[in-house]
Amino acid sequence: MKKPFPREHFLGLFGLVLFAVGSWMGLVEAPPERYMGEVGRILYVHVPTAWIGLLAFTVGFGFAIASLRSRSLVWDDVLVGLVEVGVLFAAMLLIQGSIWARPTWGVFWTWDPRLTTSAIMLLSFVGVLAMRAFIKDPPRRARWTAVGTIIGFLDVPLVYFSIKWWRTLHQPFSSPETVAGSMVWPLRINAVALLCIGAWLVIRRARLARHLRRVHETAAPEPSRLVAGD
Image (cartoon, rainbow, N blue to C red):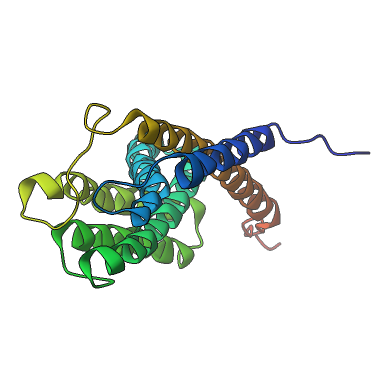
């Protein structure tokens, strides 16, 4: 029997199409940035990557609280997807930032507050996933994953507000009023595109987590019973 096409794949395909459109607009149609020139075109991917990465960790924080309160493993299935997708986007964020920093600042890396807090954020959630890999009992693994996610999330506001709270080389916040219209649309389109792709990845990872959990529950041996002798 032919398996049905998972509906979430349409979300991923839609995201890929949008990303192609947004990237074309940013790389070809949008004018060069006034101060950074052609180098500034990486921001059409870099900025949406930051938005969706922080969003994944923020939503994961909410799922972590729900997981602890309800103790339902369904929340944990989604939480692991959110953390893994957040780690993926955070790693992409640092790589893209290093590529942008070399021609702009003259170095690939500097211990700037925004970069430092972003690196700490990435390592914190990598630690959550590493800890999770060593815990085999699903309920206990879910609890510790939720606790680790809540602790790791404490750094997310620091990443976001670091350019306001400390002196930094990083570009300050922008808004539609401070960005030309021809540059706003590629940012928005790519943000929606990466949101769709990220949601697709989370759904697929949650389905895999649920499947593995059910396999584990099925394969788990029944507890031994003590039988009294005659």
